[in-house]
Length: 137
Image 1 (cartoon, rainbow, N blue to C red):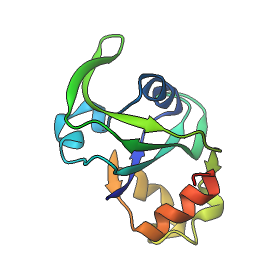
Image 2: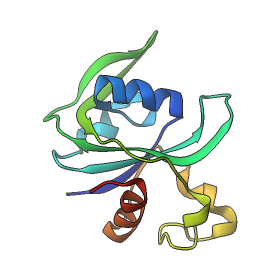
Image 3: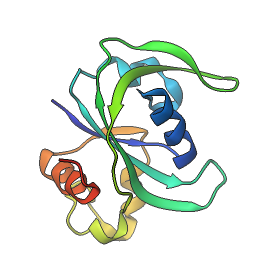
């Protein structure tokens, strides 16, 4: 089982949750191809939407359930590869109070650098810290 963070705007996260899918890196197939059933994904939303207000919080938790990637129209005019996933009901958790505790944050003064990639792996300890704060059992 892998523990991952996906970076996606809050508006796109709501679409993903409503469709029961995960996608990363603008829908690139390679970003979902290497997922396994049971992988756990925490989603971080930097903003409400592309030009929106800052959110800077962990906004969703999903478990990958789909066996293979498939392509869909994710939003009007935007196609991408996705995997099916089950989302849990969670509390939104701001990232800033957790910066000193997360091992993948190498420099808390430049914490945003850690979230520059669309998807990245994290250690189980960091996953547990964030998931517990979100209320994931």
